[in-house]
Amino acid sequence: MLIANRGEIAVRVIRACHAAGLEAVAVFSEADHRSPHVWLADRAIEIGPAVAADSYLSPQRILDAADRSAADAVHPGYGFLAENAAFAEAVEAAGLTWVGPPPKSIRIMGEKTSARRLMTAAEVPVIPGTLEPVDDLSAASAEAKRIGYPVLLKAAAGGGGKGMRVVDREADLDGALAAASREAASAFGDAHVYMEKYLPEARHIEIQVLADVTGHTIHLGERECSLQRRHQKVLEEAPAPGLSEEQREQIGRVAVAAAQAVDYVGAGTVEFLMAPTGEFYFLEMNTRIQVEHPVTEMVTGVDLVGLQLEIAAGGELPLNQAEVELRGHAIECRIAAEDAMGGFLPATGTVTSYREPGGPGVRFDSGIETGVEITPHYDPLLAKCVGWGRTRAEALNRVDRALAATAIGGVTTNLGFLRALLAEPMVIEGQVTTRTLETRAQAIVARMTDAAKLEEPLAAALAAWHQDALTTVPTTGPASTAASDGRARWRAGRSWVWYR
Image (cartoon, rainbow, N blue to C red):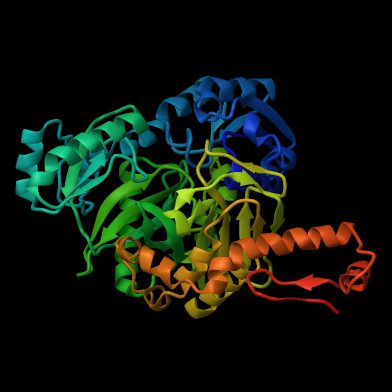
């Protein structure tokens, strides 16, 4: 199995391959030669320079690596080429197994207006808006008046917040349309945008679906993904707080219908916006494994990546809908190389020290280790910290303690911000919308205590000190005995160190 990706998702897929008895082939750019996925795989092939367009986004380089390694199959992970229908077709044309849905399904759901048309025909509720791109100001103005302000302009060929603009009034439409089109062209090579009604106080609820080659399709419950900044998710949880059993059953049933309408095969996610009144609307379908899949795995006990491999090999789903049972609660925080104090700008550097958390109910999916360079070429996601508990309160407590025990030195991270976010009353109560971080992010930063502000540099300094203490024994002073007998102790995230 060749994994056409990097970072924590490459590590996750490699582990699933090994669990299934498959040899894993990693690919890496010049910038990633020290990354964990490289040494964890059975084989690793360099595919080009750090620039993603010349390595991870190059279909030919990926296929060349598959040929050189005599791979039988390709798993794309998420991002990069994961939702590129042409790449999926090229993989299959090369005689390789594509671990993902049929290219036709990817193409239909990847083009947002065609997806909206198909969902409308399948009687899946869709947010009021256009079923075709709006290409000029006149058409956009007419549609905005029909839908009613505020409206949302979105890239027809992509997602992830690229090519997206909220427009509150007619006077802002021209500039927003031009900006959204430029960004869509730059990100996806397609300048087309479409329009839908903007629901400012909605919740982002998504449903994990699985389908095999026989058409048997099930869902594995919902995830709450409303905590987003610039349309990028920061914290996810399963199940979503506050939904009634009737709502869960209904949205799950609709998600299955959406997947079946596009002849889906494999693991995918159907995303919805839920209005304050409880109505929900189809948003899009991600035709790949999701970043936040661990929370679903934690509450269902289902190995989603393992089932991706089984389904791609022609296997049938080993369970039916009645056998899907949700147990407890799971919360995932995305640890990123970014500076919350500096406007959330991406950070770079070399990881000089590193410590992962552990303990009951804690899962930590990481793509870094000491010595890894964090460059500006890729997404700043470093790791995912997940806490599971019998109750939501226990999950919140466990993920917070796990973040406190995490140490990443040499690069600025959002660890402190994540802990402050977990202490936000709206988060504790589970009363969040897609605008929560938009309106509260700066207040959360401002409320961060001195200890939280110091947590990252303190953790880095203590980790570096601890590592040095194990290799260099002082000849004098109170630390001498502590270092020599191995009993020097420290704790990241606290403003104290003691010796005994």
